[in-house]
Length: 249
Image (cartoon, rainbow, N blue to C red; front, top):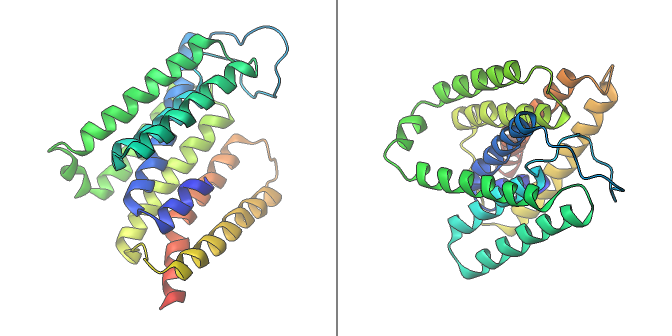
């Protein structure tokens, strides 16, 4: 979240907004695939704690592949292809080494993540993309209804991971709607401004998260967690740029 936030505030607003959206979409799709296949984790000792019981496909491998391939597709430079390869391979190998995934799990995660990144790259360059760009309210409503339908279909298999992803995703979508209407944030080339928004944004983002956790009547209530991450996603996309842009003026 911090990596995507800083990228959105300081590097490329549209790119890192879309990266955050696709990371959430990839997470939700991974949870759906796990609930369909229901492959158990490898037997034996795991070198780390895991929250969910299913193994196929690997969520870490899938999301890492989605993010780093999208960056490589965007910049199209050898450095980013090498970086993407190292990060994806490292993530895949680490999951097998820790004993929480079979090699087939991480390979499947890599394949699904590659398909998501490729499909998005092709779609955003197609003639259909501007239709949705001009209808931001429609996109927000469609995303909201889709998330609701997703949770309805996942009854019995809803866990913290897909609740967080859904909350952040809707927070980003509706936050973007507000940002586009009231803020029109532009990434600054001033390095002092970049440092300022990074420090202010991260401190307040994680401070807000801490306050919301402290206010929780039940920290394990999934719908409270959904609301908390919805607020964090909207804060990242809309309120931090709005506040810092006003302070800068």
